[in-house]
Image (cartoon, rainbow, N blue to C red):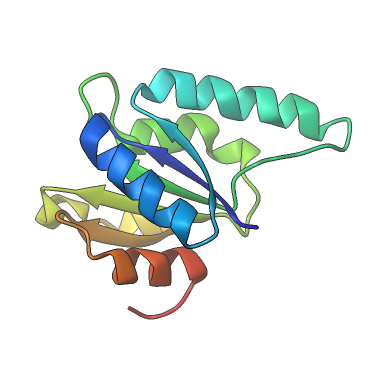
Length: 129
């Protein structure tokens, strides 16, 4: 089973996305507080040191959140994530995501809200949407 972490300040969207991804066979970690998501990754990294890791295989990040941006979240947790972890940014401000730095940070896709579920799943799986 693939594990996906969702970090977005929109609780209703997270609930819907979690339900849809769970129905498609994903194990989902969902956070509305980006600091708690980062703390979770820190804890999982410590667990990984002893061999039992439940690190996500993919992370869906809202690009613009009140507490910290998705870019900041990725900067904080990125060094704990495996190089094969798929990073997908979502936002209501799609034009702001056309940034070469994101590719350098390992971002697999940048999707505009409202997000097409099939396109999101394709991005999570590493397929062209």
